[in-house]
Image (cartoon, rainbow, N blue to C red):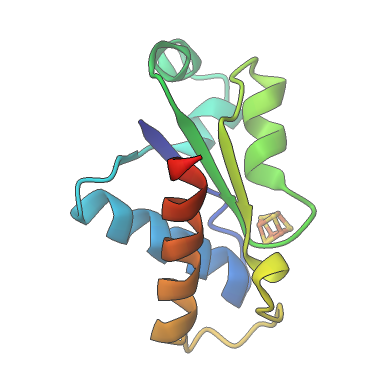
Amino acid sequence: MLIFPCSGGSNVGQIANETAKRLTSQGVGGMYCLAGIGGHISGFAEATREVKKVVAIDGCPVSCARKTLEHADCPVTVHVVVTELGIKKSTDFHLDDKEIVKVENAVKEKLKK
Ligand code: SF4
């Protein structure tokens, strides 16, 4: 399973990034490079199409991670949007651990379905 956070320039983008790092450390899946997909770098999309599950974690409804993957013909299995969990978008990069755990749990819940 591969995990793609949008890693955007906002608190929610960085919460997405932090969540992907934690899920990777826990062995839930492997964080992978969205920029490689967006840059059409050889091998990235091909490797992504080979895995069973593709998780996109987006900070906000603009959904850059999901759309980047879809443009590269990489279907997304699980999509989580941080702001949809009641977390407000801002440029305050002092991330709240409770919010990261909330996103982490939302990904895990969706994976069970
Ligand atoms: S999904 Fe939202 S937070 Fe993430 S990169 Fe796009 S605009 Fe930024």
